[in-house]
Image 1: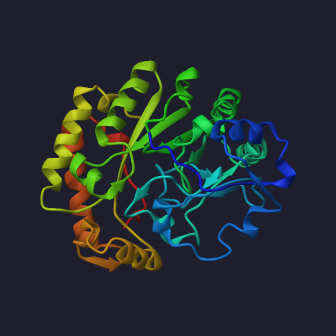
Image 2 (image 1 turned 90 degrees about the vertical axis):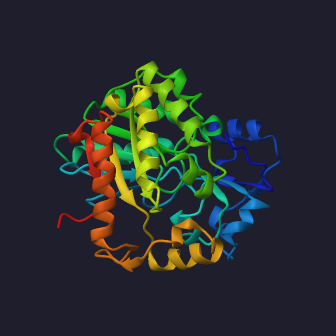
Image 3 (image 1 turned 180 degrees about the horizontal axis):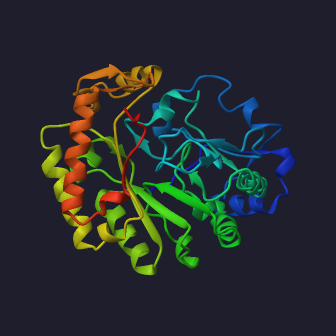
Length: 337
């Protein structure tokens, strides 16, 4: 697990006495700087993404405005509404393809502490939809990497106990599962891991736990009875992609992970135009630039459609051969054409 040494810790004055703030400050053990509002400093002036290697600040704040966002139709498995909830901004990891490098003006971390209000918004979403509703954590920050500091997982776990029609997915690359291990497994509380073959993860998933470490965490959660899922996303083309994904799937199958997967999503590497320019500038020699990229149906930059469909159909076939249920596999952020 990556741990970060915070250069400064900023706390909004209005939450200085909040028990969750006090708990986090006791754990980081750094004297805070109290401010009126986090966005009077955070992102106010442009801070280079790669500056996170040298200085990284932590902000504790109360999220204002939209706490829950409706996800695009192709974000998850089709046929049911998907939302993502905003519990934090930015990530301690440094994946070369991460869209956050061009999304905010700063890589500094913000942890929001008003989880009860987020859950209230989730309850409202449940009332507006008949049937199952999905809620995803991990869109703007890894969902597990800092949970030893934040301590909010129990609240979302209780939400799933109360509302069996709600499904929460924790999307992660972290092996920080200590808080999860304190909770009983639930059928609607899913932990999903983004996975790449070992060699690709070493090259592009900087500062993250290794693929083997993630598989070990998946295996442990699987044995404890948690529902687990996997994302092969983003898939980055290179000459040996087929054999390397085949090896990854064999490793997963040997751990009896594949037959237990709630789902497996497949998606190729993709960028908005602006983020692609940032990635080229930050990582000019990266393998992510080796494939032919074009502007796609949704305005994103990615491989042309025949190439990406071939890549994903190849990996889907390998997954089925490795005992992943065909009906559990879906393509992420692709149109239906």
